[in-house]
Length: 554
Image 1 (cartoon, helix red, strand yellow):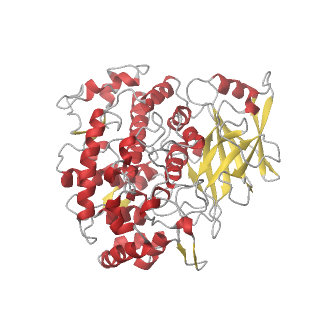
Image 2 (cartoon, rainbow, N blue to C red):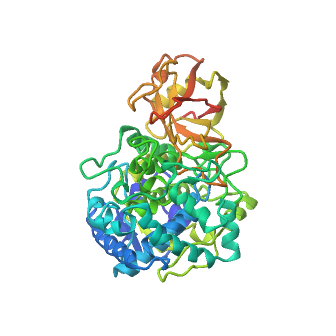
Image 3 (tube, rainbow, N blue to C red):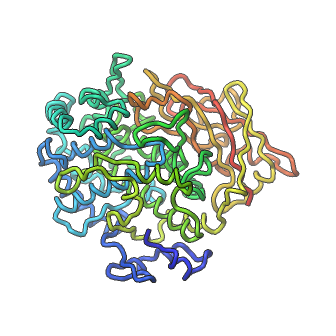
């Protein structure tokens, strides 16, 4: 990381992070305090003049990728299959794998667009909770006619892509096939089942599980209606981002304390016993994908590109993931500013994480880069880029989080008791008062565990209700009972079926009615946590298997 410990020692722990990230300190051709050269490429906010300039190059690159034959690994559609066949979600390799995937894609656009300065713009959805206007122009929207020759219907897409996918499968080496087998793919036909949404176990198709989307239905927000719904806006709010940046450990079994999602034995496997989503992956990442893809609006599907594992077919995917990568960078810089670790500290865990092999990345010449361990992508220096911080909302969130760092020793989990499909947690009133008074990261973060519906049941989003009357089966985002919406991204895959409990870290909003009740004295406030289907799919109510609340007194 480019903000070194020597830089840190030249400042103070209370310095404004915005000043540390000031554009003047990152200007091309300058050096850091220890003489290290700054990054060659700069990723800009998509709303800036430079960001708009980058979008023009991006569109040229997409046009060139569309023109390539399906057997070329840089073809627009072939490139998206890398994500479908290899992407990790719900585990601690989420950030580092996507850094590699976006990084190589960025190099491809640089090569094919002719813009040697190209860097992927980031979309700060906290600052702009709607699709940027330019992403509805030309090839920057997947509904454009340029995509129609390939995606106007499933038969056309099958004729164009399936033979090339089979030829691609025939070239895979032993290591690649072994990883795909862990994921549940033992033939090209298995991969194609996820394209069409065919469930081999149930022997039927599930429309919401299809990774393919027809051209006109490739995105479910449009130019006249580009904004997020209120629940998605809540998922990307500054409060949520502050909570997501507040953990002081790269990974912790208590997901409310962890920056990354659950530790697994491989990036293509679910963890043993439970999947755990950290705040940033479970909320802004998953919910933005679902909102753009149509979850809720068009349940039970078919959905648009962003909702399933061919989500890179929507050009906005890369702006979305550039912003997730930027938040990882913000967290890393904040950790360094306080002299805290930015990676797993246990030697065995660190070795396991850093040596995880990634086998499917493709370079700008269309060739596999070979097996690469995760450590090669842990730093932004892997692709020689940085972010042009212009005091955006992510930086402000990090700055506020940094003013009152939470220590692992100060925080403790308060476990609840399950009854009638809900869990009741007695939270000390002292913590409730601190939570309501907090101006930085939220003091109370819940861990909510549920069983993900599987098989023919495809509900993907669940509203977390706190102390709601028993007859309340749906709420709006401004309800005093609404704590947030937990979201699954993508369908259950063949070997990644979520046939085990899943836990989400849920930062509790200060607007909860239960917290506004009398919390005087040294007693406790009981919070009853239950779940309802957010989008109205039956059944309406889902049992909470377990819940706990992380209490972090200020």
